Image (tube, rainbow, N blue to C red; front, side):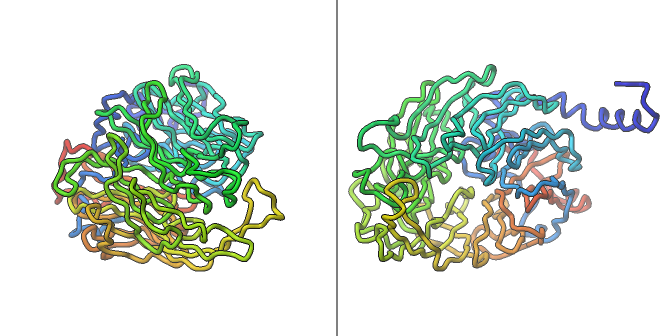
Length: 530
């Protein structure tokens, strides 16, 4: 500290030390905390490794949710919308927009530090950071993986995930598993091979790489299979689960006959060596740009009378899948909205593409639209009701093959015809829709989080944060934020007070009950996130 400063500056510096030093000194995240997160934290992209985004906090409930009030708001002063899912560790929130990372006090919303790294690339959004020990990890639009000191925001190292000059980019939050920082890539319009890569958190050196498509130059092989959304992890099976993107050329399947594995797939990978254990092709021979990167949600429970270790995905192609995650065998495949591109389901549980629904010069009307029946927004699974709740977009597009555009790249065109946004609750035992809540013609863009008190938090197309009754879909509370909600809500408990945190536009909002209401509610002190 520089004691030659003015008294006012000295007072400000002392205030910073008193308020934030305890939290910053404690910034450390070990494997045990990642395996069993405490209620005063949200240390991973999905909260925990399962991807359920269900919390066991009950302070905010059906009776008092109408009293939620704004606790604080943090303005990024950036043109980019906040799409990241924040982390919360030791009282500090970490979140991103492209090229930027912030550390913010979770009690007050005051900025602790801000890191900026200008880059050239696809600035289409950014999903967040990962943390291990006292280090943060984030990806960049020019496909680098950067590590920061969580206490100060100072850069530790900067490593290349992929060559951005070829058309690669990265927007995802990495996944930390057992001393591995796992990051994926985007860039599926440029006929590039997709892959996952694991980095050493200490040094940033590459540990392994798993290729979702054959190496470049393999005759008659597809490219694509990008890995641009964060996966999940089962510590008992020691398997990482990841969704992969569409094959390329995107709308022209003639150059890539067959299923095009492992594009539009769910894969299980050993995190220690990067070896594929099994793969399930969600959209065989996709010609509609339906990435299967949607969250592979891990649920332990009863399925049709038998205990199962399940993996559930509401996929972009319009189908809801339940797999046995020990071996990838299909347990259930069912549409959860309008779907007209398949002739049926094969013996493996995969949709069978209808050749008459491939893009053609005179156009083909297809449901769902190119954006899919859902997309990257995170769903949630509520174990009390058995409901898988997802942001959906019932929709239609018209697809064209355009030979004049060439055989590679996009290789055609598509135009949206109609769609609307809904939140859907899917019964995982049957695939049936238990309730639907409309959220606007253009869809919400928000993810979903559920709570043990029977609440579902999400957003609508009009900039409202919503609290719904998980059992019925009824609106219990809403608050306008001024911009569309593009994040997946999170929740945490600090000083006995439960917060709901979500981004809207360039602002991060924290909501909580008034202090007098908090005192009247019993909150479990030791409840884990899962």
